[in-house]
Length: 535
Image (cartoon, rainbow, N blue to C red; front, top):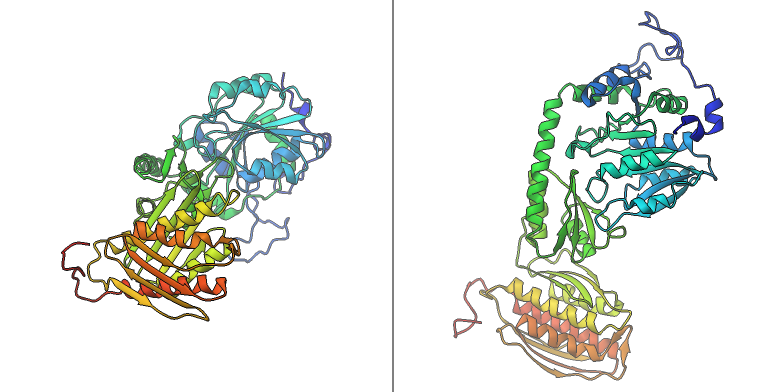
């Protein structure tokens, strides 16, 4: 049998709640001289209605509940904090959450020095009742937080499981229904004494900037929370915006329908993208999407001005993508489909994913402004930077390889992907010089000749005394150029002389870059540089 007194902190039970003069006055005052307000001001000189009676009445009608069962907070975050402060003794009591889920439960537990028990959700992101049974009898467990639909997974938690937990648990079960308008699965209206429901105006109502959260529970729970709630916690502007939104329920429902249709359309489109492994079903306004390499995709989106939520530390390989406007979704899909949004110049790309490496490379032969290189091998990064700088090309290289084994796969696969990106950028190879060559550099003599004629071949004449320069095995230098020539479909002739292996390798990469710069230069003819009519 649930008794609110058994879980409420003793000091909270004993305390007398703060009361303003306006709480003690019934009616509309002609003159208000109780709160030391400025009588002039700019329309906001009076404190807001601390009881929020107008908002409560309108929201109760919208949710088909009773206004005396409502409490509002400065976002749902404040209500989460109030729940923990009211019912959990710091350093003694505990809360239970299910992982992965909304992170603010953990944040407020830590702030209030309350232990958090985390139980993993099942493979289909549901609650395993047996796992709950193992901890539910703990007398210090006061609150259970359940997010449904769950953030970041998007699925609804089975209601029967939640109801069974409320029957067995002697504490308070908090169900976070932030995304309820997208699922139409609510526990509002259930007469369960130890059930408390969180909702928000940030999602379907479109008032995230106003910061307004709602709590729905028994009058006994509401009474306890009101004891510790600040007297004017929700400002007048927010209350006005909430009332305005509640006066247009049909408009809210129409926006929800649009977002649901966009969610389904976005799901279908993402399913067709090569780098997407899985799109999880969603009953929220977001999608959990598993990618071949979440970090590469995340970096790609950031580079194109698109911000999503990286959840790969919680769920391997996953990003959480909010359903945006049709225009926002179109840009997202364009970038993920490897289309540079309003891109200019000859751009080539390659995404390569194996058990040993995850690689994304983009080459822009006509725009050298943006280059970012990261392979995990510092000297190799330095050499690739020579290609970008001395070749006057844009080069973005993101590589994650099995460097814990050795650098071989990282260097080889980067070369293969780089060659593929060059091949993609050159397309039909019309209107290019085709040939490039150079014979200088530093204290070494390096000669690199290149022919983008479509036939892969490498002639190599360079030797190194050291086995490594930095973390780069010198034996991999020739291997790099061989792999590049294979996928770029080019003929390479490389010769180098000198004593210092560092300088020798650097001179080869610089000469290679200058040769590329010459070979890919446009000749304005638009013709294929071959008498055979094909390259």
